[in-house]
Length: 163
Ligand SMILES: CC(C)(COP(=O)(O)OP(=O)(O)OC[C@H]1O[C@@H](n2cnc3c(N)ncnc32)[C@H](O)[C@@H]1OP(=O)(O)O)[C@@H](O)C(=O)NCCC(=O)NCCS
Image (cartoon, rainbow, N blue to C red):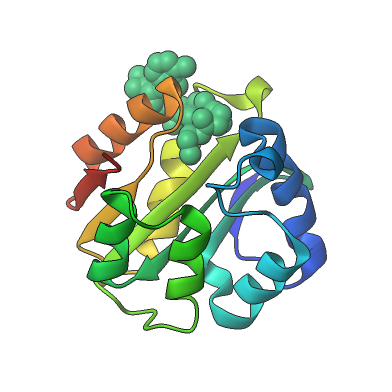
């Protein structure tokens, strides 16, 4: 059975962090949010529901990660003056009922792609934040851009891409 769940401990986030690194090589790109122990601790302390893990039985198939932020911080990121790490640092501790949200990463393991799982996990992540009206994103890959087009067509939310 497929389920989507929120992390309760650092161990729950470990495999997701490794998937992020294999998909985006974040460790070698200072513009991206770094999947470090510090970030994991900050997620758990501030807003654990910002991570939606997707599993089948006990196997992690992928996840979606994004967080509420202010309109100003999101715009500063989308139009270039903040890195993703700075957007995170600006957002943590803020209002988790903001109407503005940044969708940072969605990853599905290659063997499970093209079955609607990214659409499912992203939709369930956003459902946890019912106040959200605007979502910013950075498509990063061609299939990421295609996925965002799909999400735009099924969700009643405004999507804004990083320029
Ligand atoms: C992007 C990614 C998360 C999509 O996962 P997925 O589970 O295959 O996505 P879905 O099955 O929900 O597909 C949703 C829509 O996205 C589009 N799409 C997804 N993968 C695509 C691909 N390889 N080529 C073209 N369109 C694609 C399609 O429109 C698809 O809808 P459809 O199947 O009804 O045509 C996955 O390819 C992945 O993990 N890639 C590596 C990490 C990444 O680039 N993440 C995105 C940036 S954060």
